[in-house]
Image (tube, rainbow, N blue to C red; front, side, top):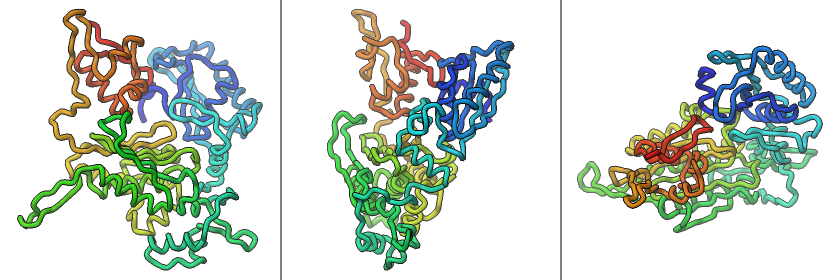
Length: 462
């Protein structure tokens, strides 16, 4: 368990929020509700947005704690009981509201009502939940996955014979009508077999069940070389996506151990690529109906972005260690029976091991808001990655620094830049932008002010 100071230095995130002083009733209630509806978290009263510990006067702490208790009681429905306590931090004292992930979700602001007063935590912000996500919170309370719920859209028609044919082909055995019930792709209701969402997902009947693939020129998204969009059943989407990836990475040949036959292999292990695509298809949040899986091939990397944050509050470290929380139980079971996945929770570990054995950098996994990004790195032929190489230069006429990567135009109208702005400017992931900013700091082009979420980078003083 990190110390309170270390926790504060990490900055605000999906499980942590700072308040310099106790906010007004409903504003605080929204933050508490957002944590309770998602993965729980802590609200620290007495810390500002720049991670500075301001603290509260000892005389105001009892009244602050009483006010929090009253806000929770008067403003939040259903009833929620967070743990509220003072915490010494050096010579200052803060008040911490520790909110557990609730089993009674969705919670909402009582005076506003469920449809307009339900909030969720997305990254470091609180957002009003839309109707679709409120339904998802209801399912979570009942421990029902989206794929297990009834198919309610009357405009979606599924041909049972076509579905059985898809399953027979990929499960490598005949699939009878009764097997659809055994696989929980349909359930009896008043003597009629009604399909679940899993059936529509597997058949590719939903508009948002698709994979968009693109090959970009260079290492940003400004110019694309090729792009495809794959629909149809999930199994065919996986195969089409794999073919797209293999078409856009390099194939190398070498003489095998018998010194006679040529052995060909792709620059990124194909099993790692397949596992990454399967991971996205099996674990994405299908209740997010405006989102799809995106696969992007750049000169230096491959990115797979999947809708949905990690389920049940698990972290990147949990995923790497092999912990598995299955969001789509029916989909996962069917892919397991098809032989596409062998062991639960081993997919990411397999990807890491295969890339390590191939001499590639360790793949990066990050949760960004309501999406998860997996980045696999392609081999870099040069000794130095030119995307990160920085040379500090000074204009001899003006004695002013010459900034690389488009920073000259940025600093012409801004005093500083943060990690989010750098991601957009450079066209990189969070980790990539962070590496580039750190390189600029190391080369005395920029200097960092602040820590965590509040960190900003400013031009180095000459």
